[in-house]
Length: 469
Image 1 (cartoon, rainbow, N blue to C red):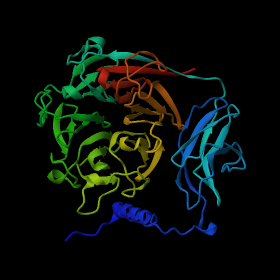
Image 2 (image 1 turned 90 degrees about the vertical axis):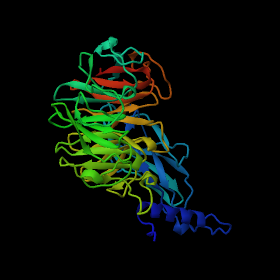
Image 3 (image 1 turned 60 degrees about the vertical axis):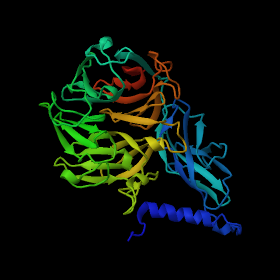
Image 4 (image 1 turned 30 degrees about the horizontal axis):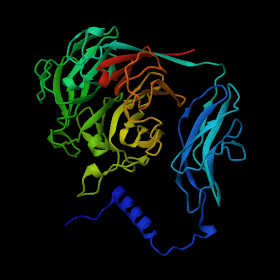
C-alpha cells in the first residue's frame, strides 16, 4: 500500500490544488480588508558600486491579494530600517524581479537599503542590507592571460603553452603543496599544475573504469570535482560511478563513500548511494560535503565515512528523489535546490552552493540554514549558469558562469564581473572587460589572489590578475 504524500512535495501539490481551485468560473471579489502588504525579498548583493552610485533590486514573492502598484528600493544613511519615506526608486512594476539603479550617494558613506512593493494595503519590505560607497575614484582592473594550454585539444604534459588539455572542467588549489589540480574531463584524468605553469598528470591511466589502488593502476569514470582536507588528502566526485573517491598524500586511491549504484541512500559502507555527484568541499573537521546533483541535495560524509543528508528537500516515501528539485530557503530538509553543482567553504564553515538549475548561489551555515546569496530562477542573468565556486582567505567568492563570465562577490557582498561577457563565447586575452571565454567551468584562487579558470571549450587554463587601483 502506497503511503500518503508528506513533506515539501505534499505542500507543493496542496498549494497547486488551491491555485487551481481558485481559477474556476465563479470568482468572489477580494475585500479590501483581506488584502495584506506584499511580501518582498531584497537582493543580497550590491553591484555597480562607485562613489555615488549602486545597483540592487528585489522580488515580490506574494502580492497578498492586492495588485502591485509600485516597486523599487529605499535607502538611508541614518535610518537602519529605511521606508518609502526615505530616499527611494520607483521602477517598472515587475513581480518577477526588478533592478534599481541608485544615484546621488555620498562617497565613503554606509547606507541601509531594502526592496519594497506597494499594493492597496501599503508597502511591504524585504530584509535590510548594508553597503558603503567608495571614498575615492578607485577602480577594479583585471587582466586575463592564457596560463597553460594553447586552445588545441589533446593530452600532453609540459610547460605552460606546450601542455594540452581536453575539456578542463574543475580546478582546486591545494594549499599543502601549492599546486593547482585540474579535472581534465574529456581525458578522464586528474592533472596537476604548478603556479609556474608546468603541467603533469596525477592519474596515470585515462581509461574509463572503476578500480582502487595506486595512482599507477586506479581507474576513474568521469571525475567532476576535487577538494582537499587540511592534510592534503584529495577527494574526488567520480560522476560516472556515483562514488566519492579518496587519494592519500601517498598516492593511494580508495572508495570513500558510495556503492556504484545510482540512487539515494544514507548510511555507511555498501548501502550508500549517490546520483551524479558533482561538487565537493571539506571543512576544518574533515567532513566532506557533496552536491548530489541528481538528487538535488547536499550530502555530508564524516571522516569515518558516514553519509547523511545535510540540506535539501527529501521526497516522500515511494516517490523518486529526482523529483524533489525546487527553490526555497529554509533549514535542513525544509529547503530545495535544483541540480546543485560546485561547492566552496569559507573559514567560518559556511558552504556556498552553485545552484545551477536555479541560476543562484545559496549559502548554508554550519547549522544547515540555507539562504540565497545571489541570483534567483526569475533573475537568471545575475550569476547566470553558475558551475563552480572558490573562496579566498578574505572571504571573497569567485564564480564561474559557464555562459561566459567570471564573477566575484566580495566579503562585503559587492558583485563584480571580473572578466568575460554573458552569452558571448570566444578566446581573447587582455583586460577583463574585453576578454572572452568559451564555457568556463572551473575556478580556483591561489594564496596570492590570482584566479585560475578552466576554460572548457578553449582547452586552456586561463589566469586572471585582479587589482584595485
